[in-house]
Length: 140
Image (cartoon, rainbow, N blue to C red; front, side, top):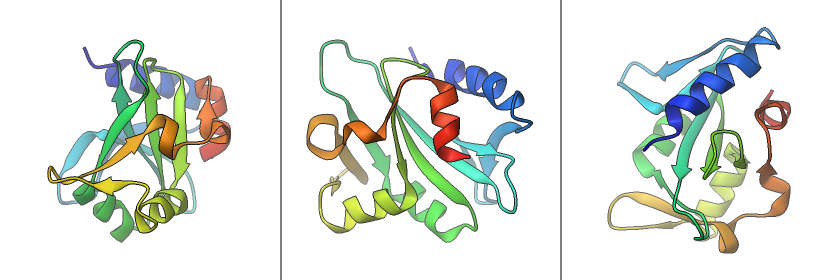
């Protein structure tokens, strides 16, 4: 069962306190439930949210190359949000961090078109968040 709807609902509530609205991001070439827009200025912020829900296993996510390319071409500030068995905890990476990890080969491109992210190999504790308030502090 996906935790993305709950994540989005709880994020909407947490962002509302900060006078920020939450919506699905659409760049004109389609939209995805994984791409969430925050109404920030001077340009919007987009969260590329992925989830991992398997108990007792290290986190493992796939960032779709086409989505990363789409975000890179857009005039937005964006972050990868990797939810780990929770709608309110996981890891957050800036676009610059994602670019660096792709460039140095840490995020390997698989034959299915996803950059693979392994919790213990690719992520640092400094990228971890334990609440949506903490996530918003990082991205706003």
